[in-house]
Every structure is written in structure tokens, then in C-alpha cells.
Image 1 (cartoon, one colour):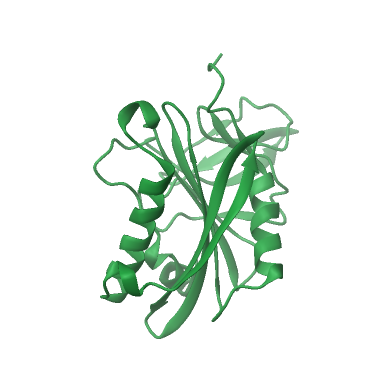
Image 2 (cartoon, one colour):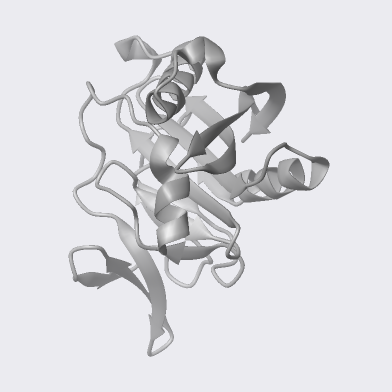
Length: 208
């Protein structure tokens, strides 16, 4: 991840009082003798148990199934981010997964409030001064959720974020895209919707 991507990631948050999701993050994928290999941030690798599907697991019930040559997996900026991607030099995506959900007191409004608190902290402002562009309804695996659009100014750069939080009984994920811009437009929303559609989320099914 380049310097610009690291700066853009500055206002991305996790709900830090809950347990970590997985011990290592996938930073790349490759093919070896026709088999998919997942490369981890600790320098290890393993053959994917997803076979030849165009998916890799981020957590037990969460996989990225998009084209890795479009949204390219890249190095995560810190241990709290489970997967990171870049579309080009201005557009990035991240995934933050935590193994807690509604049964543990998590909720969609809570995740949205924490997102704004972390953006405010990155700017040194109260949450009420974080520019919010609104909420859009979203659907993931047939379940209703929302995408929060907001911005932050970090190191003199204006960054806009689209953050879709998905809260299951025992799992929570934030699927985030962000870019260097002053305002959102329909193209940004469309890129986020396309990125969101690349995920296979099984929070509402028993893990086999």
C-alpha cells in the first residue's frame, strides 16, 4: 500500500473493545500449478480451500469473490484491517471484520456512530463537525443494511468514504471504499456498490 493509501486509511475504524477476528490477513493471491494460493502478511502461504473459485476467505463466513485484477488485494495498513484493495491510484477498499454481532450488543447505528467518531478523531474535531453526505439503503445477500457516506480531511487532503456495515447475530463487517475527492458523485456510489457485490457474506447461515 503506498503512502497516499495509508493516509486515506487514517479515519477508518474498528470497534476496538471487541476481540480480533483472525490472526493473519491475506495480502495477495497467486496460482501455483493451477491451484489458488493465498499469501499472508506474516510471510506464509497456503492453498485456498475454495479450490478454483474466484474467491478467497477473509473470515469463516466472509469471502471476496471479485476479480483480483480489478480490485487488487494489497497490504493491509494495520492489524485491525483484515483485507485491503486498490482499484487505481485514487480508489481504495478495505474490510474490517469482527466476530461479534447483535447477540453481543452490536447494532448498525452503533457502527455508524463509531465511524463518525473515528473520522472526527483523525481530524481533531467533534463528531458533529464531520461532513456527512447521507445514508443509502443497501442489500447484501438479500438482507437490508445501509451505506454511510462521509468525509475527513487528513494531512491537508479531503477523503470521502462509503462505509457499509453488516451486522449478523455473531459477526460484523465494515466494507469500505474511499477516494481523494471533495464530494461524492454517482460514479463513486456505483464503484462502492460494485465492490459490495463482490463479497459473499454468510452471517445468516450456519457455518458448515
